[in-house]
Length: 345
Image (spheres, rainbow, N blue to C red):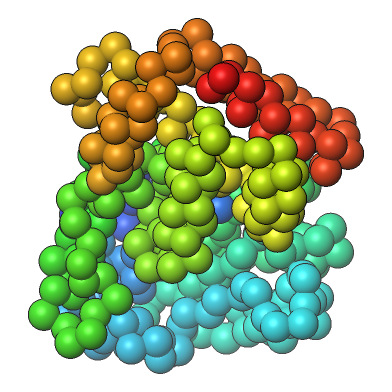
């Protein structure tokens, strides 16, 4: 895949093209939130560095080196990352895969490239790599990916050129999702079938600029169920009894407390859509696939004014603050549900 085929990040792609064709360094660090695509860009940089005929658009995808790379068999490319049963990259693996290997001449390319998930490097592992990063053998290139740069030693950071991946725009994510669905539309029983424009738009916004999250949402059946149940809960708030709120609704939230951030965001989006439609029933909203239901809901409960929408949103934000100071989960959730319920009365 050429750099130009990747959506967005135009400044970064220009820099990578320059690195590959002109001013190659010996250590690079891709930074950005988890799931934003650091490894995707890091692999494209690695392929371009190893390519026999690189251009500013990356590897040629035609030479032997690119074919080896695409097949996952390139002898001069190594990746160190997550392994089952281990929280960190072990020092023994660093020694055997890098320190003992880097002195061996490349086999198929002019360079050797090591791609390392630096989020998995503890201080011992970083110290083991320091000499290699400071004084690398000729033609050895290190590429790191890291979501939380603060965990790294200043000496490691200072030896690397940072390549920051910015948050994607909603339109960029929408384009990437549309491309993915188009690529798979002819596959029999494709997991991407039946995904319409409204859902693509919803996922593009909900991903909050992190493209990997949007791709995960496309096929996340549990999220679809979560969204359905949160919407059902919000639609039922006006008529809900305290028993329903404090037993049924609380029980569901407790069972899904590991996705509490998503639950709260879905609630806020529902409220935001209510506020928009109260002001303008013709407006576009985030939950476009539920617009008719929300309009019908608002017509049934005209007492739910903009002020009350704001009060419900305040209750959610107050819950968030309480959660940060480890307030009692059961009491906080119960209070949230009761406060929102009262706003409909």
